Length: 490
Image 1: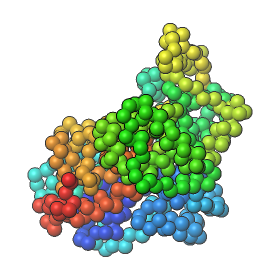
Image 2: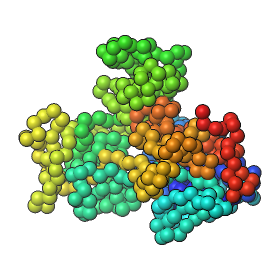
Image 3: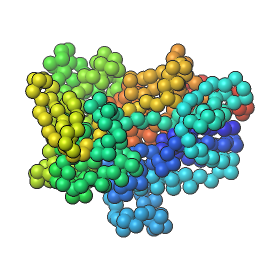
């Protein structure tokens, strides 16, 4: 039996690791990854820069079913010897973030703990381009960019195919040596280090990526940074100990029963203010609402309307759903006070190179577009975010009717992670984990806003999905077996 996993970031690696732990019949696990450097970490937990930290506390980054495992791992002297030297002497606290590269090492270590003679792993370096349903003994084929075809009995799609968003104003300048289109690559990292400390740098995007880029540049001695977004929204900052005290409700909050939009907004504002004053973070509040998600959908008029109405006045759900790390927020605050960093609101109308600098024309929503503000910059970093399922492999799956979009931010899956086709039928051979399930997490499970789809979200579904797939595996690869009744989507 061959299981092919497309994508080997955190979600794909963990799916393969869990398969290795749980398999009770011979399995060949083939893991396809186009960028070997991202194995075990994906784009979010890369090995550079090694000192950059996650935005989540250590205790939130555990994987598997034992939340204390990560603490044992991080305190193990033998493991520390394998870390980058600049990290080996660090001390750690359960409620503080850890360097991002350690998550990649932790995921890799979890794979090393698989002890199952029934399982073999094979790594394939290449870009998976198309999935086809086959009529032969193996029901699935995956075609790579070099035209190699890999046959599979089961497929796990663990690739969000996270293409970087490119603003219209940058599309004709994408290859310019002083513009970094994707800062979350090794090339982007190396080019960022080459920016002179006195340069005027524009960072497009004030989200977590934009704040991180500013923080890294500040650590390199930069003193002339600008971050820009349409509304200038910034993620709230975690406290130094990042407690996120658990919050639970005995019943659904009464703002759900408001009869008018005005009453809804008023009650929602009071609701948020009450718990924020008690020291809970916006993330705590959204998490406490999650058990009532089905009630909320019904009361607010369905998934889309519910997600649209649940907004805080000064923030979007995206910036409420997860915070910036205390350290990054403090560094940016101090830089703003010193005049080394400024935040701008507006939309880039155009970017033109003139006499060795970029002339950027910016206008604010609601203001006269005939009189935009003009600013000059020497370097530009694109940090507006990334798109999910923007890749030929997903385009073909959607065009062929094998997959179906869900909420515009992912693809539709069954309750247990089976890929659903254009007619709404759940596949018995194709499964989905990771970022491609963002729509499912938002609309079925109430992960409102941009959840940054990191370790907690992977942990919330990957193990149940793999267990369900294993339960439905056929003893005869040529005859896919449907899931037991308990695992069929309702």
